[in-house]
Length: 199
Image (cartoon, rainbow, N blue to C red; front, top):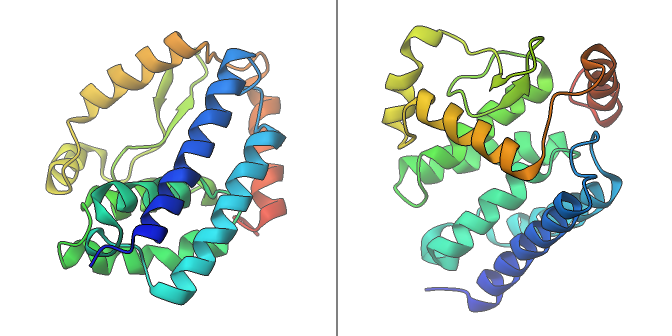
């Protein structure tokens, strides 16, 4: 049975996230590090999602509809300032995907995000970063030769397609290589340590 109040709240949370992102893209400030206004939305949404999970379990499609389940994934995927929430929910998503309650790419992309922020190679190639030559490329991939097999197994398109899509989106939105890549990496690592992604 669809829990309409949960579905509506999740969709509203995802819409708030998208509206803030759009606002920051328009004023050109989204890509200058982790924007504090975006961080506030992510934290607020993540805190509320954690309360929902405590009370109801992971919001699967039979509980909140497919759009509600997608919204829950987006909120969790963006809750990067709360490593404990992402790590706690990953096995819940894996179990829900194994039971056919959510798409398999939900836990797959969450796993990549966790590994990215921990500084470890990703599995499915869904996380991107700027390389030294100024190209937006997939973060380091474990067993890269077989990545498209793994991507296909969870319903993701070939990596080359996602690379082209990510690069086009970056160009369209004005995302660009940091002026000082080394300083940007140092800043990102300090942030990752400060919120508990790394020791």
